Length: 292
Ligand SMILES: Cc1cc2nc3c(=O)[nH]c(=O)nc-3n(C[C@H](O)[C@H](O)[C@H](O)COP(=O)(O)OP(=O)(O)OC[C@H]3O[C@@H](n4cnc5c(N)ncnc54)[C@H](O)[C@@H]3O)c2cc1C
Image 1 (tube, rainbow, N blue to C red):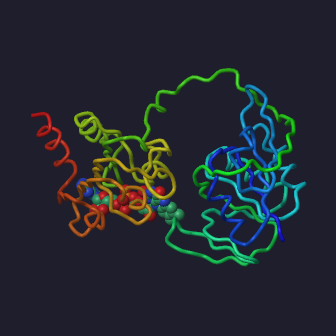
Image 2 (spheres, protein in one colour; image 1 turned 180 degrees about the vertical axis):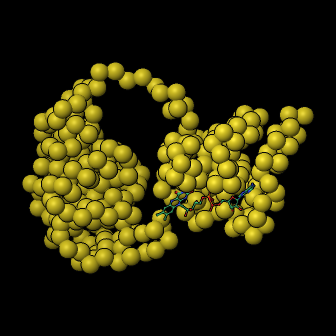
Image 3 (cartoon, rainbow, N blue to C red; image 1 turned 135 degrees about the horizontal axis):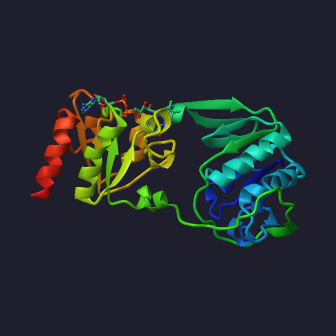
């Protein structure tokens, strides 16, 4: 029987626990700061105790050493930003390649999603290898065998934590979202989307190019396969073409309204209501109409 390791600071990892089980592996979870009883289904848990005021990232190197001391060369980590840092530290420690989007794990091979979910690739596994994958939900059952270790901390402690203004936005919980796309020509033009969002009591979001291309929005505010998958009651897509990677993030919306000047834009296939028109004319009119 081979062994897979999971390195994580997330408490709910049922999917990550199922993946090694698919090929009959025994599983050891190296966790930073999470109680061992969250990991039923694993064979063993190595729990790194996180000292007060120390962020997970500060023990990434230590966590990587714990993983390297375990047998087996397949290592899984979750998708949270802390888990990605742990995955990176393990990859450096093991001199291993890292893949995202693990779907299936079999003896000698793995299936991963590439190109934002458009392409399914089968990999022949050369060891060692690190996968970042969806963690899943809570798992229930008996508590695995536990080893506790105290961390060696690399460099950083938290001296204060204040809520940043932008953290007020929680797209996952938003009931209404106005999402802006590359149909907007200038950052300054976004005020017409802000006006509509304010009128509706909606959160503002965007497609990826507006966050990663031009940085008009924070990265956490783009909807799609790469960041936020949202289920609002109302999703208004403004100047967004409707590429698959975006649609995967918004197709659980209850009602979708698309505003696009191109009547052939694929976003209209997702929409319950479509307005074919210039967003610069449509948005102010819509905001005015809603105010009446
Ligand atoms: C690995 C990978 C992951 C990705 N992940 C994501 C992701 O998570 N989220 C995401 O959004 N994208 C993602 N993308 C990018 C995605 O493929 C598209 O490129 C992106 O979604 C397009 O953004 P857009 O619709 O704003 O821009 P475009 O595709 O350029 O569309 C702009 C739209 O605006 C319309 N328009 C132009 N002017 C006006 C006007 N005046 N009035 C009204 N409409 C107008 C046009 O007709 C067009 O339909 C990913 C890509 C890759 C390769």
